[in-house]
Image (cartoon, rainbow, N blue to C red; front, side, top):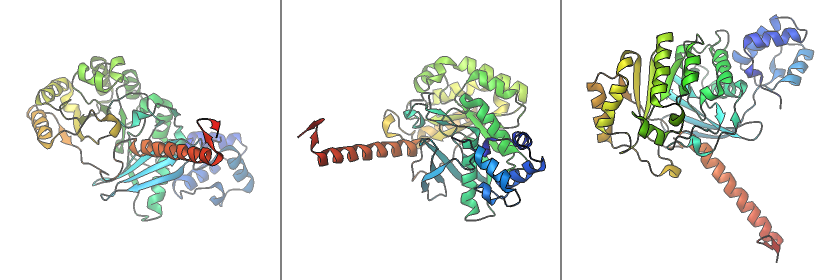
Length: 374
C-alpha cells in the first residue's frame, strides 16, 4: 500500500521533490495545497505539472482513511470511526471546549497496555499507525469544519485515543512536528498534549526532544498495589520508577505534568487514597496537576462502576486541602459511545455477529448442519 503524503514533514517533502528531479519551490506549493487549501487529491493541485502529479500519484495517497461511522452528541462532541487501508478500524473524537476545538487522535490499532477498565484494551494491538494515518485524522476532522463553517478550525490536539503514544514513538514525534509546522496547520505545541500510561524510559527521551508539547500521565492509582491490578504496565514500570522519570522530565523541561485519575467506585476513590495521591505528588506539586475523570462504564469490565458524586467531592476536597492543583473533568459525549475504544469495539462485535448470521443463513440455504450435508 502506498503511504500517505501526510506522513512527510516539510523537510522530507522537499527532499522527495529534489530527489525526483523537481524544483525546490514545488515542495512549498504541494505543502500549501495540503494544509492551507486542504485538497483531497493531487489532481486538485492546479499549478503543478501533469508529470509531477503522476509522480505524486505513483508514490503516495493523500487521505488513507475512509469514514465508517459518525456519532454526534447533544453537547457537540463528534466521534468518528475510520477504516484504514488494511480494513482495520480506529476512533477519533472532536470535543468542543470553551477554549477551542480539540481533537483526540488514535496512535495504534488496539492496545497492549492492559488497563482493566479501558475499552481500548479489549482488542490487542494489531499495529502502529503511521505518521500519515495520525495526521489524516486531524485533516478529516478539519474537513468536517470546512464543509460546515469555514471560520472554525482544529485548535488543540490530545494524543489520548486508542493505543500508547510513546510505544509508537517515532511516528508520534513526526506527527507532532507536522501538525505544529507554522507553514501548515500551525497548531501550537502548547495546544498539544501527549498522554502516556507510564513508559518511564520514553518519558525521559521525550523530555529531551526540545518540543513544548504538554505531557499527561495516566496514573489512576496512588500506590503500586492498586495500580498493578488496574494497569499491567505498572508491573514493568512501578510508581517509583515512573515518578523518577517524571521528576527528570520536569527538571529538563521545567514544564507541568498532568496526572489523569479515573474515578472508580470503592476502588481508588477513598479519602485515604486521595491523601496518598497528595503525598505522592508533593515533591512536584508546583509543576503538576490532577485531572479527576468520571468513569464511562464498559460492559466487558463490569467489576467497575462510576464513583458516586459524594465520593468524588470528598476526594477532591482532600486534594485541595493538601494544596494539590486539581479539577473534575467535564464530560463529553455521554449520550454516544463515550469510552475510548467503545465505538470500535461495539462495531467489531456487530460486524462479527453479522458475519456469523450470514454464514448461518448460507449454511441453512445449502442444507448444511454441523458441517454435514442434510
